[in-house]
Length: 397
Image (tube, rainbow, N blue to C red; front, top):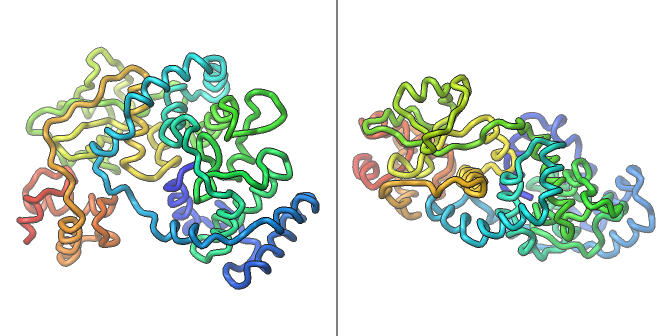
């Protein structure tokens, strides 16, 4: 599960290393055979059988392609409209609703035990693997061992490599199990440590198989989402309509308001008959600026950011869940397209030259660049919707 979620975990590691992951079992780099030997000793201490370990150590190989892919990963380069149009398609909407019927008893159990709606689980199921159709073909042991041996993020991947050994010893995966290049396994793409902690045997066959068994995948996902802080019965995202002349600077993370206060500045739910407690706090999200769709994100939306820390991915996944629930496709006017890479780099360099923090100059509209754009818009008297435009670029030049 969730390549970008690991970036979020990496941030936590920098701040709270002992709380999040504990210690690595060996130094990174050096000799791969020596690394495997130390890993074997550590796994032995955790109770993994010698027979399983001998086979694991004999078969595990370093894969330089994994390291290459790890170095190349980055944020989404697509705009919200482009990405969401691809992600929220007829196949996922039609088949998602078919999954509701086929696995109704399992979804009912997931809601009863963990409070997570079927639409939320199914949206992640669709986004991650198209309901199990695309799970990845990288050998999981080789992928995790390569990342654990590498020195970029050993704090994350050394414990995951050991957890994969434990899963093999337990019989939940085998030596030839495949998945994503970063070690995620199964229909909802989860890392081995999460499977160890949150895995549920949904069909009661004595094995937790997230690759082959939808019942296991559904209940395990619900268990993890619940652990991340999901509040049963609470909203996660609602589309809203904004008035002309809206104060665009009110949008964005860190500027939460109560529903009562949002209503006072003209914010209205698109679903006119929707009623909520006016004391609920939410954040106004404009994923494609003032002419794009607008959403209020509630406390449960934070769970999406724990699953995957990409803004574009999470708004898309949350809206897909609403579509599966029956909501209409979002509305928008005719927003400006996202600047191309060259223009975005030019904008980032200009913002940086006058003192704004844009993070890495990479042509990607990340969180820091959005915030820098907002501040520059405020200073120049433009609509502060955090969306970079050619108008802003021209004024800065």
